[in-house]
Image 1: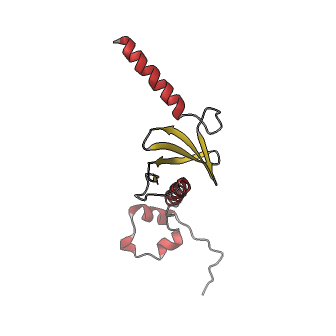
Image 2 (image 1 turned 180 degrees about the vertical axis):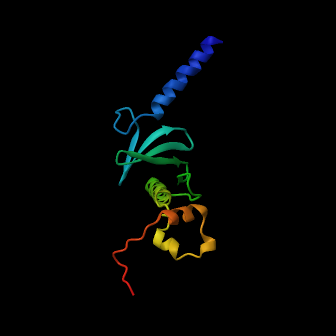
Image 3 (image 1 turned 180 degrees about the horizontal axis):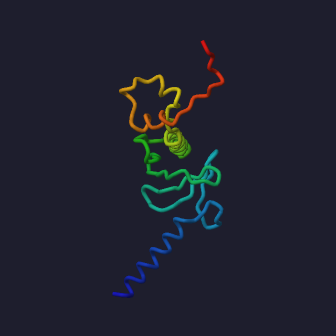
Length: 139
């Protein structure tokens, strides 16, 4: 029983070593396509490749007998580069949407809102707000 476990554990370690090879490792199976490097991770059908853009991994694509896919959309791509570009575009858009946060309104914008639509936090901000008086003119 212990021998079987240690054998399985050794096989797991060897497979993890292959999966974690960097694109610069001489033992890594690397395909270079314009703008990307594909590093074989594992699998027979589909074959799984980690996709690098520069030194950063952007995701995984899959090579089937008849097509490529990237796991983020349901498209079947004829070429590896198309699957990589689709993955890259998806990841870029995801970062864009997660990076753009709606900024809270300024105090000046809060003053333009209807009073009954203000939240308690907005009321607290307005209580502490002191407008700049340099632009005020006496009538």
